[in-house]
Length: 109
Image: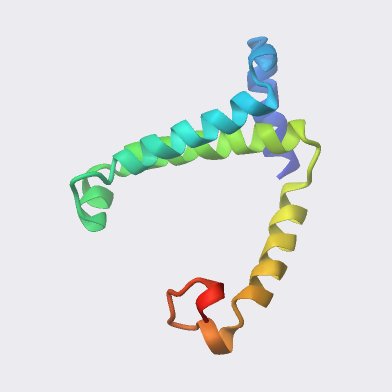
């Protein structure tokens, strides 16, 4: 993971783009790229989109992840640590016994 973070940040820094990538704008960029990912599914079934637009899905997902990596790096948070912490919280919210096969929000379990 550290090598990937370095590669993403080096790409940005070689182009002197860090000046444009403050936390607010990175968060906005994540949302915009996620919307572009979502747009690929508009008016199509999931299967149809996956079959016909795989390259676009990969590109947009990569954009979301790249901006997320840059934001995490700028905030000086450990990506693996925050994901593990969130999974622990979700394990409490969504115990297997109550949530397995159930799409309900934790407040409705």
